[in-house]
Length: 166
Image 1 (spheres, rainbow, N blue to C red):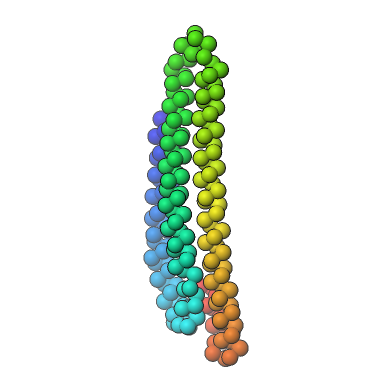
Image 2 (image 1 turned 180 degrees about the vertical axis):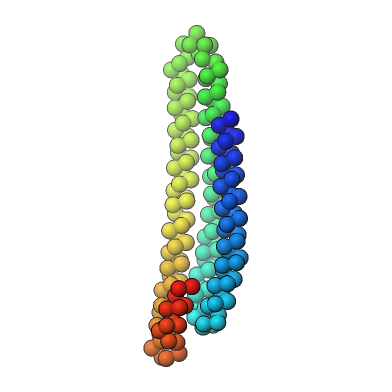
């Protein structure tokens, strides 16, 4: 039952995230790109420079995260099965005085599960800062190029502020 609940939670999260991310990626990106192009084509092209890097980072980490999620799920399955075995066979474990070995085995499975979760969190915790780093590099490029255009009177300050809001 716990395995099914954990799997259902993982599937539900993945589906919900996928639908929302897909909608955001298509609709919001398209609308934003159109608005940016109407304001300033040159600045829009500069703003798009970090996007391929962000896409590559995302693709790499999604593949790694998928493997890590699968590993965590498998470890959880082993841990859950061990608990089920121990509960159903508690009389036999006690009769043969196997409490200590069974406890150590359970501790090992628990530590393995914990380690895999920590590994997953480390990957997750690396992915988003990298994505945000390149997004901020894009913002710096926009400020640099846009600032130069404002100085040269090719762009108004208001247009730059409007562009930055996208």
